[in-house]
Every structure is written in structure tokens, then in C-alpha cells.
Image (cartoon, rainbow, N blue to C red):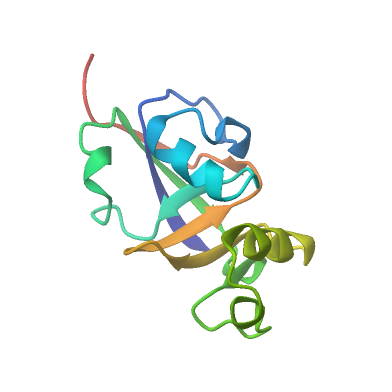
Length: 126
């Protein structure tokens, strides 16, 4: 199991669901690259993009690394064969993975399935 960290202004109760993907300005741009619904997580809580400074919550989840396709090692040649983000997400999902490990400048995980929240830390007060 690996720990995943997700920053948000939303007060999620029990899980983080990709169904909400694209509702905020920074994920709206990513949604335009691929319509595959997804949620982004960091592998370290201190590794986050600047626009998550001031987030209200830090969520912690855990998933089995075996259920994630690693884009860095790309053992099945998906990235080599498919360069388009939409096609990569679609292919990884079609092969039965719940998400992938990669990098957006920082090591991250992208999940295509809802994940149960293991812990929630309130970062800022309203």
C-alpha cells in the first residue's frame, strides 16, 4: 500500500470521487486534454503545486501499488506507443488499472476510481 495526498477546498465525507473532475479552474484545463474522469494525488504531502497553497483540507488515502500502472517504467510500452494523454489514460483504464503513477513535475498518482479517505486534515479555518 502506498499513501496518497490530495489537497482540496471541498469537504469530502467518506471518499474522493473522480466524478467531480473538472469543476475547478486548474482541473478544467486538464479535463480538456482528456475526458477520462480522474483525481490527482501527490506521493509526498509537501510536494504540491503553488495553487494548492491555502487549500482547506489535506486528504490521505491508500491504494495498492499493484493496481496502478507506472508510467515511469512503462513495462507494457503504453507511453512509448501512445503519446496522447487521452489515449494513455484510456488504455491504462481499459487494461484494468485503477490509476497510474507518473509525474506532472512532481511525483503523482492519477486515480480513475473513487478512493476511501483514510485521514482528513483541516488546513485553514473559514
